[in-house]
Length: 174
Image (cartoon, rainbow, N blue to C red; front, side, top):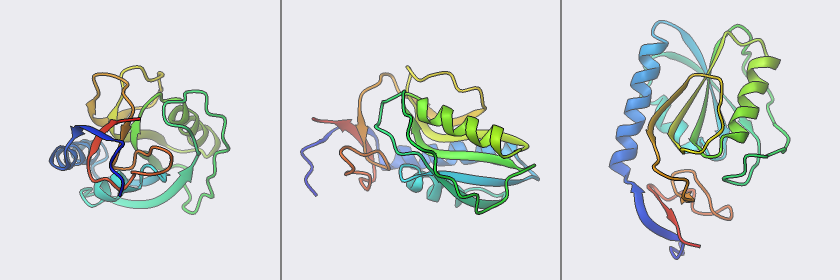
């Protein structure tokens, strides 16, 4: 792997693991005794989702949704691709992604799922959020809030469709 774009470490593998546990604990407490449907935003949310669900003590079902976007673009108008492999009507749904950056895509997808499919509740779970994100009117469970809006790569976050598989999060060096 060419590492010329990997900059200063932002979240180590240890901090990511601790963050996953923190978010899982919040969800386990919030939805104790409930069945939930986890919907992973793909491809970015795959790694966080995989780590998160292994720490959930709840009964879960899983599905996925896709809405291709450019990281940091709050005006994403890409098609939302959701096949509803698992019925979500009347269910608690947790939409999972690696991060909320600008928040535009997450807001669109959350609204779409909440309004079009008759869910009982919709929440969002991410490893981290960025400070200048748009307001998203659904409960959000995250481990940390970044200090700034620097472009980041690793642990699901891409640059030019690469670097998602780096096991930590670092600043992007362009």
